[in-house]
Image (cartoon, rainbow, N blue to C red; front, side, top):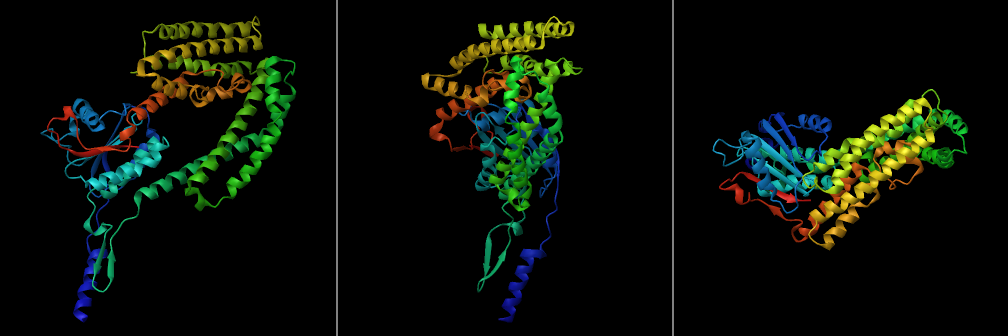
Length: 482
């Protein structure tokens, strides 16, 4: 019996501590091909650089905006063949040794993972890696979801035998457990903690700004002429400022009184993000009050205030070409040509407005009227163009309805963030003026709705093949939908 216990103790020692520990290795290279424009590299790259792999690994990340019906595996292989042959083995029949390739299609809502022969994992582990990303990807947390996938892959590729999560039973119920933490769960918790921290910092900074500027904001409001058309509308918004500030103070107390341990929860992150949004909105409002006072009274800083009123229109003009160059665009349609003419003419008009304001031949309120008229004209052009792209993309009336619904939500056609810092963005409803960036967001959302509808029957399916163009390629990898 004593000999048996000695053998069991030796086995336990070997499993838990006697084996040579795996050496941590950082990624040897990180290559990002973000063709979808969905990743924040300033967040992504430092996060991946901190990830430890069991063996030196090259990380490649590829994003694309495709269709839900696409074979993502086939598209990833095609991209590698055309742009990164070094991702392939010397005979081009497998993925290169030491590589981990993460693919993401936000529009087609697919995620894929691919491995060099010396990094491949079991099919179940491939599924595990992809599942680790999906909660985040469903919330459009593209960067965090990508990092979660790379981190989970690092935990599974080349994992030493003594870190297997299985339980080994050795006589009489003596258990030696070799396991790892639930990496994907830990990453999601860390993501919410980071979101909570950032939101709390943003909310506190904006709340501090509002608090410090309370007296100045009140003074600015008192010097706005309430008989002015725009002045009266801004003052009407200001009437709720005090009560909103009191509510924000209560939110601030609650936000700063939360236990730090609760920051890893989704509901806490969302509450703090709401606090940050409310604080930012109030901070924005006191800036608008200052600009209204400065511009309508043509104070010494009127030129800066005027430029802030033009900013949303400047941004829309800058985005028109990109909108019309989209691969699903209709650049030769009459409404597309009208958008290009609008850009050219309005750019010239804005320069003249500034000169007329300087000369005194144009009053500030009339100047705001001209901006409003230009944005209303742009809204009409975007609505016309929306019907063109909907007709081009949708295959039937039901799909047209799905796209119109997506393109007419407040989030889609409302003005972008800088517009909310303008006088017009304050006094008018958010959906009065369409913005180019809002149009693009709505169009992307509409296409996603249609794609999901087209592939509803297989929305949760996965794929391991490389399609008709893959030939005899047999690299380890698969994709699935989220």
